[in-house]
Length: 78
Image (cartoon, rainbow, N blue to C red; front, side, top):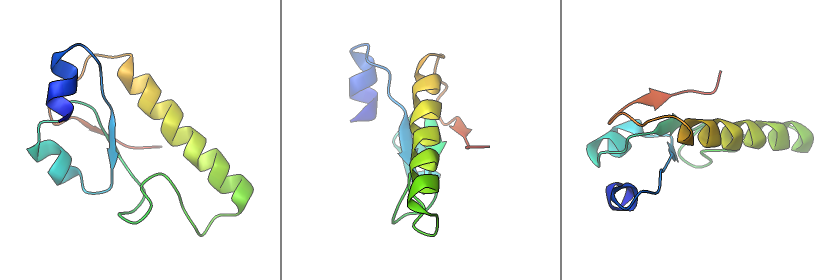
């Protein structure tokens, strides 16, 4: 599905905790998520800190959209 969306000219960043699956389907922008059950959240954080953490994931994913993708490339939140 991701490859088909990109084929029509729409860039995609896939956020997931199991990057091997994203690689196997040919994703060109992969952002490693926090955990399988909550890829962009962290339930151990306070509500305010979790909101900040989620914002970082979204901002990183959007930043990745501005650069050319490379099949199987994985980035992390630093």
